[in-house]
Image (cartoon, rainbow, N blue to C red):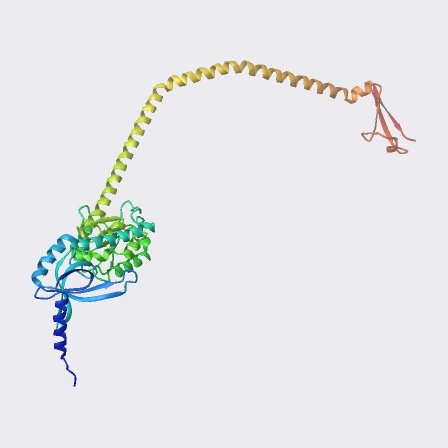
Length: 410
């Protein structure tokens, strides 16, 4: 029977040879896929390495940071990067290789270079911003104009978040008593589902976009590492192209996230978002008051000018009336003789015409015709114009200039 080893003996042999073969410490680049801290203060990680082109997993290893080391490294890393060692970030760590008979292969982390993580985070944000810029959408939401006094606000937040309560209290109990109408669209504001949840809320708002003047995306304070979800291309793309102006107040003091960059307004906290809306309404009220004051001044000046003009006209009116009367009198003095002459000529013309008519009538009268040697024959009082009008036995009367004769037709 060949020599045999127990599993423990095999693992122990591997451990001895591994330590002999890799006795040094090595600087290793990796992405954190899991991170947890136990009650003793030790931090346990799962590190992965993915293909840059396909994003497929190429390697994976367990790692740990013992409590005494983790206490120092955690403080340093957070001060430098503004975030904790958390899933999704890339790190450069100094490790030693270890092998345990029960737990297997693992890495022990002794140091961490925060500059690498900062560079990677910055590269990710820069790449997203470059992509949005090339697509021509990065400033689309920033270029939208707010209504003069926004009152109808769609709010994206977690209903249980302290930041949401602060926002509502600040907005609805404002010092000027302005009325605002808010509708909450619930969303997850931290963790892996943040991107999907906020985009879903935006889609729900978009179905009733005509009911709102703007959108507020808010969350309260929290770990800075939780802000990584706001450096999302897909979320930034949706915010940048949203048809309503968006305020982002996600409670942080670190350098702006990609979401801050594309939003119409970026403020630090939910309370500051409420204050921005209140101040916007105050500005509108101030402008209205100024416009009202200016209008009253314009009206007052116009009335004063009109009054002065009226007074000036009143003072000059008697003189103007007198001048007008004099002018009209001069015109009458000129027109009356001319009118009289015209009337006289017209009367004379009519008189001459009447004389001609009278003369024509006289020349056409029976008396004048009889005096010229003509006679008029009547039958039953009617003038005879043709012999055919007479029959045998008719009695006729013939008139001359100097008398009349009667006769009978035979």
